[in-house]
Amino acid sequence: MKHGKRYNESAKLIDRATFYEIEDAVALAKKSAAAKFDETVEVHIRTGCDGRHAEQQIRGAVVLPNGTGKTVKVLVFAKGDKVAEAEAAGADYVGGDELIPKIQNDGWLDFDVVVATPDMMGVVGRLGKVLGPKGLMPNPKSGTVTMDVTKAINDIKAGKIEYRLDKTNIIHCPIGKVSFSVEQLTQNLNTLLEAIVKAKPSSLKGQYLRSITLSSTMGPGVKVSVAKF
Image 1 (cartoon, rainbow, N blue to C red):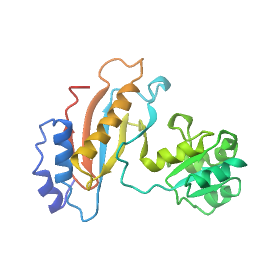
Image 2: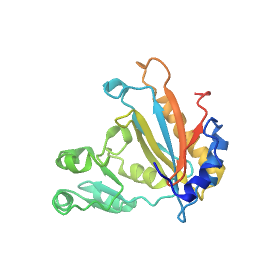
Image 3: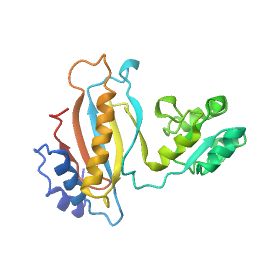
Image 4: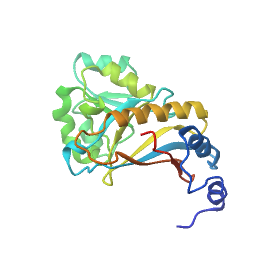
């Protein structure tokens, strides 16, 4: 794969053979970001799980102490009193059945997270083919199917992110922006890793966290030492 001049200059800052401690890795990921926009810092965690087995599927959510640096648009499916509650809590969009054709037929997807009260899941289920592939389907494990819509919205706006295995058993998550301090990014990463370590499936044999790599949106990867995990 051919990379641009800027990427190649950034890559020189990183020793590919070294596994860095978390704080050093964060500092390097920040330093090697060379794009003209405020890049997102992402972590990629290769696990020893086999997602083909239901008991080894990892999925959950965690609120990052310093947020993600991104303004998140929240859509809430609710009815009755919960509509006013969602609006008061700062949901960007609130609705019910009337949103189905807008999303299904008009391709409206101007939101980042979908929250639904349990009594609306019958309605939301009809959008499975649209929301599912985009990772937008509400799920009780990530706290997005709930009667406490105020807490759900507050957590999401405060920097709640979802983690889950992809098809190759890797977890990809944003942990903030390049403009964050090393300390803020380190706190966010440690909070996420603690949650993932706690989510280790009991049936898993062998090493759980096989590799951790940090990178900015356009930057090279920085390997993180997994010794302490």
